[in-house]
Image 1 (cartoon, rainbow, N blue to C red):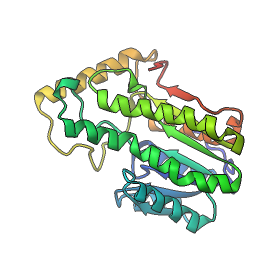
Image 2 (cartoon, rainbow, N blue to C red):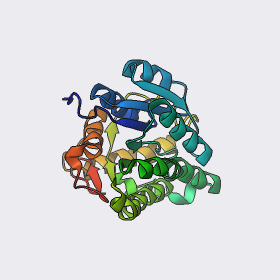
Image 3 (cartoon, rainbow, N blue to C red):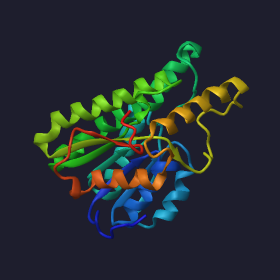
Length: 259
C-alpha cells in the first residue's frame, strides 16, 4: 500500500488498540508519514509495535474501558509531544458471536464496555486539548455489523459509535474539530495474539460464527474480506488534510456493503 511521506509532519496522533490488527497498521503508517504517535493498548505487546514505529513514537498501556485509562493515555501523549492533533479510536471487536437469546446479561454488558466505552472515554479525554489548540481530528472505527447476524450487543455498541461521531461533529465543527468514522466490513488480519474470548468455541459456536462469515461475504459486492492495509488507508485519508471538508459521516469500507 502506497504511503505519503510527510503527510502528517508536525502532527501528533493517538491510536488506540495499536498492538495488533487495524490499529497496528494505522499507527505504523502514521509514523512512516511523519506523525509522532502514541500507541495505546492494554496489552504490553504494544511496545513491540512502538519499536517498529521508531523514535517518534511512545507506547502506553491503559484500560480504555475506563475514563481513568483514557485520560492517562491522553495525558501521556500530551506530556511526550506537547500537543494532540489526531485521535483514532480503534478499540473494539466482537467477543461472542451467537443469537441474542443466547447471550447472558453480563456478556451483553461486556460487549458494550468493549466496543462503545473506549470511544466515548477517549473522545472526552482528548477534547480539552483539541479545544485549547483550536482544532483536531477524531476518526472513530465503527463497523458495518450494525446490520448483521449473531452480534446484537456489538451492533448496538457500534451504532452508538456512529451516533457519537455524528453528534460530536455537530457540536465541535465551529471549534475546528472534525469527527469522522469508518465502518469496516470483514477484514483479514493475522491471528490475534491475545484473543478477545479465550474459551475454546463449541461446535455450535463455530456454526454461528460461520453464519457471520457467510453473511459478511454475501453482503459485500466484491464478495471478499478486506485487508488491514485497506482499512488503514481509509482512516489515514479521513485524518489528513485531504479530508478537510468532511465531518460527521461514517464511511463504509466494506467492498460495497453499506451496513
